[in-house]
Length: 353
Image 1: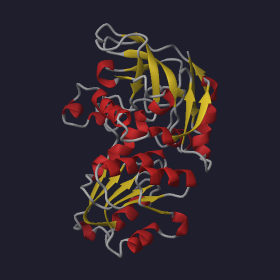
Image 2 (image 1 turned 180 degrees about the horizontal axis):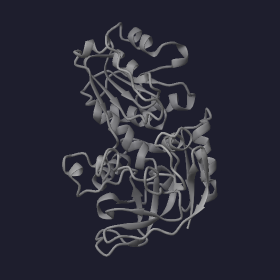
Image 3 (image 1 turned 90 degrees about the vertical axis):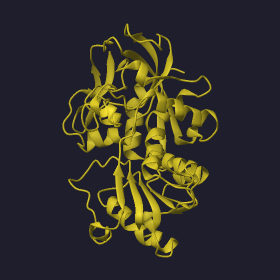
Image 4 (image 1 turned 180 degrees about the vertical axis):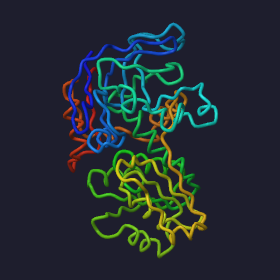
């Protein structure tokens, strides 16, 4: 089979590999639509995961089941399915302790384009199909549905980790696709004032439509100073980090109130440390909680995300700004995520409607 892969650091290209085989509880899926992610860029061009060679990229896909193991009960060949980016091993101790995304080790529930060939291929493997797949509803187009697999679940997890209470003030740092979903998730959880940090007009427009009450730009000065000015020096109750760099955590800690929560769902692909400012953290005693997490996987979560879309709680189609047709355009879409033109939120490659 053919797949689009990380050949080595900074290098991508097409490779030929043997098609994967399904174990008794597994499925083999052929992609209907895929989308590249900024984490693919971190992996290939920044070496965030270390060296990888000939590893097929991609972890955002909806597809069609082509083969199942003899113990799979709920799916059959021909079923159209949503494949979450995190596909845990549900029998592990980590899953039983409530952290399936770390089943088998830290971040090991995220398999695709981490240590396992990803979804940018003619066929890809899904472990524990009955626990990790969900049927794709006919009413959700494939180019929108692929947003559920990572952008929606990750952004909403940022809002979940923040434990937003009714009426609380929230800042979302970074309003790319994950941050936009964090804005939507924060609104659904009852945020009052909801401030987005970003610059691209296309993202600002969508952030406002998802519920952002204010937008600030790092191009207009220090974002901590801007937040403190907006809040008359008080800061905010919750901060969700969905973008930024090694200095962003320090900014978030500084702008959050004592007793507040900083939630991180950003993939920090560079730097050895994320500094914590001593004074802003109250010399360690400010009761400022820092939480960072990989999005959970699993069929039940996907079902719930689907219902949020199906019943009009969030319009995920707004995330998709560029649609390509044909498997051969995966590289074009990936490089678009690397270059990030002003009119981009997310590209999707449709292989089959």
